[in-house]
Image (tube, rainbow, N blue to C red; front, side):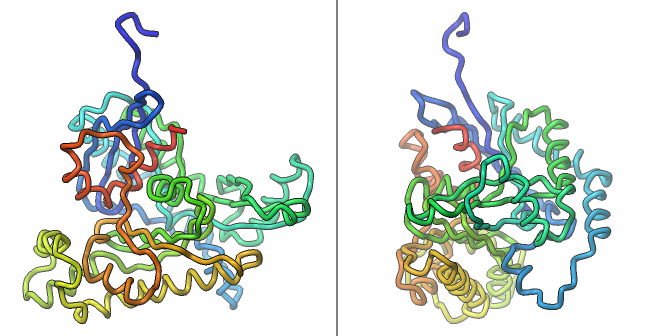
Length: 378
């Protein structure tokens, strides 16, 4: 206990993405998370260099048996540590912390999903002390890199009681150790204490789905890519990604309006406030169609897996910078008979009522950073 009153317990959630850095500080208020400060440092950041670690589904689709070039991947990852990006990103992060007047140095951050291996494995019941060895052996068959080069974590997934007596199901996540070292170095240079690194999937599940046990999808529409996460029983069970995002929508708008693409962002933001059905859908179908097809494929793939055949998806939760674009929501509702809505990552956070309009506007961009900060609250 401090001499001059209670010492507040606060945590930072910091999301380093391709369009900049987002920061949220949450402070414990009677055990509940209260918003203390937030901010965005906008800048184009190259966070995907290093060769992508493919999802299990993609690896299984590679029938040729050709493995990715491990030496080239290692070379690309090594470049991250030596081309000045650590200093650049750390300087940007340090300035953001200063401008937002953050009061703590304790931070949780996320690794880009394009670099993370994510799968579920099942095997007969064994002693707990054998699990790590079994996980390493199973994952080694699937990873495009040696397991010694990866940081692997796993957690048990609930199963029906009868199955749980005989089998164990684990959710496994693996990331390159060099990438972890890269992020750790950024935070050290910025003067912050990195207490945890996790994937965006867990952060989004925490901020947008919470304890909901139904099968749902979180659709994260970023600038360069769209990520698809199936959440079941509160855990992100699958992840896939396509390289189509808000930039593709911007290009369509730029062509239709006859103006440079870098000038349409504000127009798109203004259009996002338009009522549903007030904007024409036809011009955007070509850009949006790959997204809807990937949603369908993800659900079909998951529901074909053993133990999932009787499950039914209930909702699609939208987030990301282009989540509020009306034609996207309209097209998804046209294609899928589910609840489809923009997620509210602030729903589990205390904040002043007067802030609601602006928080609602920035919420889709802040969902990952909010989920990261929420990791420290029960």
